[in-house]
Length: 268
Image (cartoon, rainbow, N blue to C red):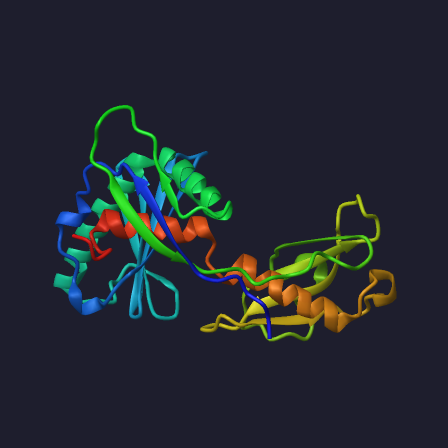
């Protein structure tokens, strides 16, 4: 059994302006979408991911407008929509408007989301944006899942964890099932102030699950690491869940903002 902080109800007030996507219909036959959006500050490009149980549509802002492509059930890119023509047209119109609304608000919107998440982390339950003049405001209400309570690293030296390619460090390509998602490596160094560069363990998700799988890297001197392999793997599992499976506060708040922008948060 693992101890876990409670789920908390958090409210945040944003100035989202005109929500064009909220006035457009979304095909009801597809169910409720999973939404995620991001902003690249180098290219100044916004990306929106809209997922259903039957497929996904990905959209990007571009100098010529909005570009899109689909993903089928297996996750492969395709130019062919997994849905019928009417549903595809409605979804594309709604998603394009949602991405345009999001793009007009970034990067300031993401700064506001981070500020709201910081208020949540400080134990507060309400965050309100700053405005210079009277304007229409939008209330976002989300349930933020609590993290697992994990101990700090109790072994010798210093560790870091990071996403890795399948062949990185030679750790993720020996005798392990290739059917993995989001693999990470736990890197270790004996020096407390050094840069970890020796892989000692790895973790990943089996497709279709949210339960991490962990594995010790062969040949590790666990006496030098200062913790037995089974304790390291148990610690890594908690770290993986907190950082790569459980939604973080900023991500949960951003999802609430996107649902509000799209008019699917149940308040319109």
